[in-house]
Image (cartoon, rainbow, N blue to C red; front, side, top):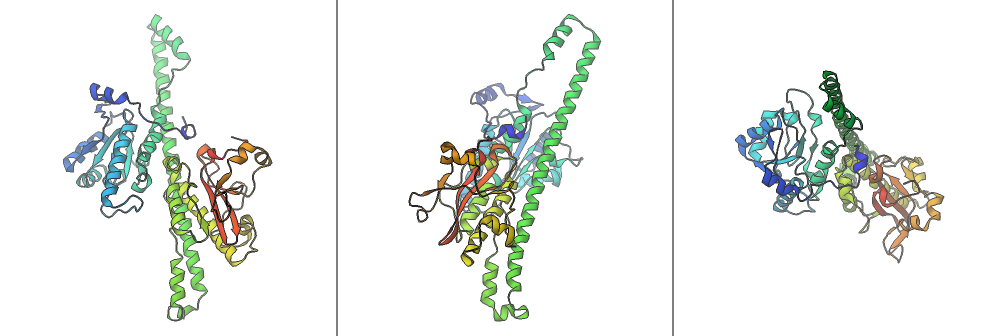
Length: 443
């Protein structure tokens, strides 16, 4: 089963699984499966957990959560105590959602160092992150990329995000599968005969199935690894764009006397530096509202199903790209304030040379909806989005222009709908969320 089939599906264990695990003391691959998080404390606990993780007979994933590091800040949650409490809620909810599919474990601060020393740095986990250890962990090999690593800031904002991320990563491997059509025939043949020829045939088929399963797991992990690389490239791109803005401001001032003759201007130029990127769609949305308010209006109700976007395997790449899109819209609003005749967003992206332009391509940007969408009252109704009442007294406006954060990704692929207003110069974002909520005639 591919990722696309899991979009908008929350995988979680049914309630009856808990009493079955508690009563039955279920074991899988010589590991007892508990419906609650299992805590491992200190060096002894770390050694016991490392033995489980590296046990070759293990056939169930093990998820290891680490404690929140001192000094970690997430202002929207609260102080450190509130963050620790939210972290524990995330761990417990993850264990509830994936009980029977995976075993959720925790390490304390002392245990983290000991655990990393045993399994090696590349297989380790730290700083509040969690890691999904699939079966067949061998620290002697360079295959750590198979075991997904998720930082603290990716899952902490919503208490169910960690559970969604875990189950979407392992669920397609754990689903019940129907027997192939040939099963009944082969079963009848084997029942009526002890022929070694049929047994050999089944052995060959089983070996082929095992090889195909292993290949599918490897390809899936490579795909996730490529997603991480894309996110890193997006972050580098955003950092370079931010540096370019500052550099252009500096070059516009007078060389050697920049600070002595233009101290205030230099301070203002430095203040233009924005965050380099975003770790998730909700992170990009929060930063846009916090940093870009001067030329970008984002009223309440604009962010839709961001927790589902955050739980997607493409979350980090989508977050970085969405942040670049928000900065581009903000820069366009800034350009409109300087020159009211700057043209449409598409024209500005094509001709301005601004370092924050968005790609003016039909695959990345649409300024109009199709004629079929505009003819359909049902589809038009889904494109009336929240807007500042100063722009429209009704508090809503029909918006056609939209940025495509991702073409692939299925129904979850994010979209940003917007409109530009010249007096005062500002871009108004009306929607940020999955494509499925603004359908067209093609889906």
